[in-house]
Image (cartoon, rainbow over all chains, first blue to last red; front, side, top):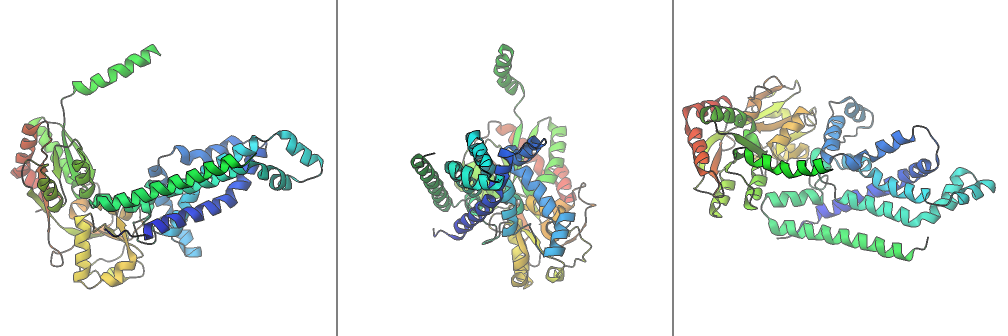
Length: 221
Length: 245
């Protein structure tokens, strides 16, 4: 059985793009959550954490309805930017951003909250702004937390299935990611091909995690 | 805490008290007709039926892995044949129904059997069940080929994992039109939703659907009763109401 590499590349591309964008969104968000005294912070935290506890089918169902061209949001997207989020790679990226957000934000937020308060105060006393303090003092001191966020997000996106099944439409090269390909092959009773994909994903996931733990051991906090 | 432990210990007992229901694995296209068949069968025999709905391919895989079903109603003959060859069924599959395709939309777009509407720019997505695993998807693709529309429509095609997901795509408006089973649009809960047209079986073969009793059944007598019921005039009538013949 020849193995089709396309689903594997698609999965890696989806995970890579999602991780990169989430890093840009997640760092300032985690910084703000760690440092702010905002009264409604628990509400924001609860919203961010929802994907951790919601079944992917729930998220997928709401996204299917929201992204559909018959919904207000879907119609508006189509009209203004000609962007269709059902049955498209862009749609999977948007869905993954929502779905993997806590995996990026939580570790970074925890890392920042664990740093001694005195560092922050010293930096403020020396006349540094909050943003500069975050970038120059705090973030460089929680590299393991950043790395954990990056890896968890990447790995979690690789493992996405239910969500993609709901809004993807199984299009080769667009939305037929590796997890869906495995599902299809099992259904076709092609167990060898399913094995090949599954073993690849297993090996890949293990390699990524091993790398993280190895680096984490070396990084001195 | 003690009370909780007691409760947890008592929980399994409740599972044994009930008589064992007949578990019927049903291909997605027949899920609605199954509801009616189930009710009629229970009225007639008093035997409780539990149905498990999924695509034929997935149910077949589950059965191969020892899923505790008694009967399997497939969307085609091939999957039950596979199980029969593997020695997992009591007998060779028999045809319980012939299904047919319809084109269905919730939009106001005019539908016609020449399928011209699929080339309309207003149609951005055409939902089809995965032809590799769903017989109804296979039929839809062969119909498109027969009408020489496949190349033109291909870029708009999105695949549902089964007829059930095709219905989801159509009902949520994610796809403007889709090919589904006639038994779906004839369900009383869906007859008022959008509009549909029959697709004559000139471009595809009518879909012969097979049923088998699984060897691992623990209640062969009840399973046999259900098979007999499927052949009864009453069951035939119900199947016809849902567009099977």
